[in-house]
Length: 195
Ligand SMILES: [Zn+2]
Image (cartoon, rainbow, N blue to C red; front, side, top):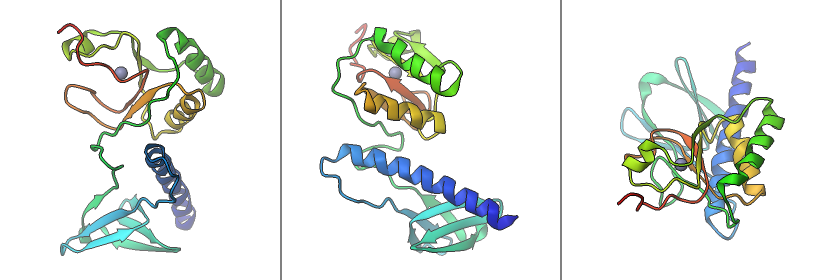
């Protein structure tokens, strides 16, 4: 039973690191094969650089090369995940070159509905009071309430890339910019609105 669960978790972890790798790749022109490594800081203060970490109820499984090892929770001070270069913890990725207008959102909605058989979870369509308060021009953008690393979020990001639709991903809150993880469809909002 346990090995099966573990195997599932490793598959999941592999999927996540894959998404991060893709995101990092997008930023750099030459497609270098770059490994995103995770650092485990041990209770003694020693850093342990590994390929993957999976959290379990009583500790962490980490992978180095083709070896997977278990670490007791008490021995781990913190886990440091890689950040794409030049980005904060709440990273933004990739703006497509295509001409985009909010009317094209129908195409995005149609894709999502066809793929997941439910409506796209749009949090904000066009300008909102919050965006106005932050001085962000959001008139030509929409925010989708999906974590960029979720299955649905990744499918959406993939679609936007293929269609060359500009977007930004947010993995967490940024004061004055984003309240939490979401996918912003449209160009980066100019901060001049209403000022
Ligand atoms: Zn937005």
